[in-house]
Length: 135
Image 1 (tube, rainbow, N blue to C red):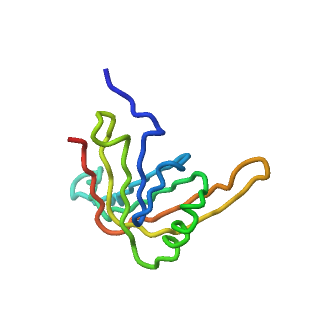
Image 2: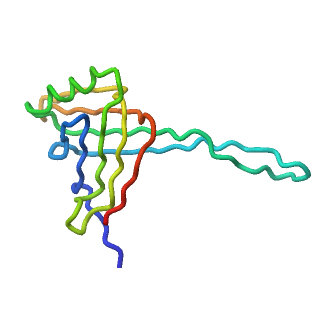
Image 3: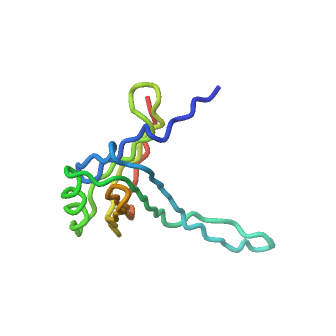
């Protein structure tokens, strides 16, 4: 029987800052530009893989320790290193990890009088991305 990985078992490191304890949710999207190519003598086209692109978004709670780190990462005008760990590595509940470079496109800080300060961060992937399966 397959073992599902709980959503709270994650690790997200952005430019050396670990956001794991405060992440409430996250999404990674990887895209492949697929082009169609006419094939002589056929009514059905073939397909070709094009550019690989993607993005990820994370949201969670703002802590005093991470507030400055988020702002520093947002101010960077060059791609920074990230790791997106699925589950917990090395203890039998890991699903591998994505790593590469990204650039923060948007950073939102919000509050609610009845709750805590929260953030959401949208990042665009840059260059080659690597997936490493759990050993």
